[in-house]
Image 1 (cartoon, rainbow, N blue to C red):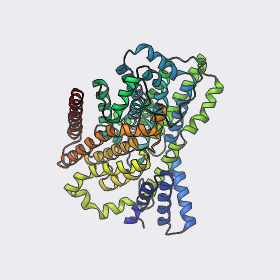
Image 2: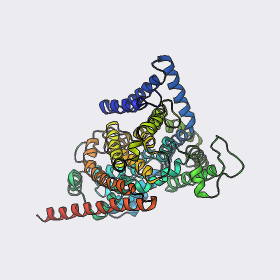
Image 3: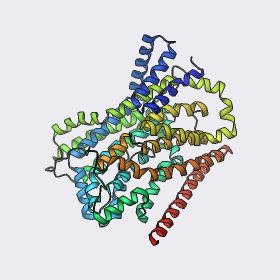
Image 4: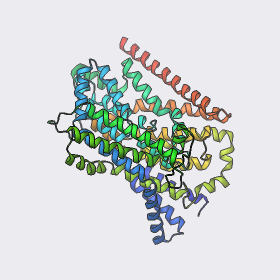
Length: 524
């Protein structure tokens, strides 16, 4: 079966089951198992053996990323235990004077906590809810802000669990550089942030979100109905008097340590699994390109965590016992993310990513060359991948599972180089995956955002959908245009500028129309 069309069957099975059942874990597992059966020609015991071997290999190969995820969970726990999140909220309440100020502060905090979407959702809601409540911000609007500064921020942050995950799916020695190059093309994430800022600054609300905010402004009813979900905030001992620096210092340490670790790793890592004495590259930019992102983030995050523990214990912010308790609590909070990643990595491996058993790439290279060389088909590929990613991510409620399914397919068709068409296709997959995850009612981050805001979950989904879909529609049009432009041979920088400018202009026109329609409706 290796090198034939059957190599794509695991992905087809995983996608079909995910769409039918809306259960990502069994869908990914069955896709993996089908691939193992194909490779072993139906030998059940051998299939299980290869499946476990591959899964174990992926665990070892990506151990650094898994450690990074666990450390992020631990950080979320200790920030709550020190009272740092509550201290920031109280400080913000004293400094802010208006509804707009409270929303902009929420956006700023969400952008600051860019290392992980779980970390973001678990922190921003509990920190800012008392502040936004004071200024009568509807809970559905707060949930929208939380959700829009979670995945859309993480997917354009080079130092994040998402960057590490995407790098793990890329069959390239320049994985981290490839991710960085996708940032200007990641239209959905960028447009979501720009639209959110524009609507807050211009005080524009529309659809059900506008109705909810009007009720909140006039009556003080922030929920516009009963909340269906209990709060999932991290428990905060109200007797603990935290300080703002308890929040800022760990985040700064995490960023500095991770960046420093990536630079060091890039200089002294030889990609044979060894750290060497002689520098492997000549400058910092090359070091970022050469580094193993998973190992670097794992090392940097552990160092940051140890330093944070030392600072907290030395200053009396947290006892040694509570620091140790946070280890297991943080690990538990990240189990769902780890499970999705391991399954997705294994599916990518069984199909052909990074030398997988079925070698899907061989089939593409020998039988699908016409698709990659056809000007029209090549031009439509980014927009098509965007739509497919939107659908899969929405149906399954996971971005990472979608990355694992589609990125190997895209790189099989287009290659793994740094050419603009490859970068554009990968960017479209990332953007579509984030949109689907953003609006899916079964997405973990969507659920956590509504819980963090203590908002009716279905209300959050309904109010957010028009906002997110507007950005997705604009992104689709821009990807259509970009596909044809890149097909003319335009180099990376002009293509990125043109694609981003197209999206921003279309967004500005859309906001202008919404603003003018709103004024006309009020006048009537």
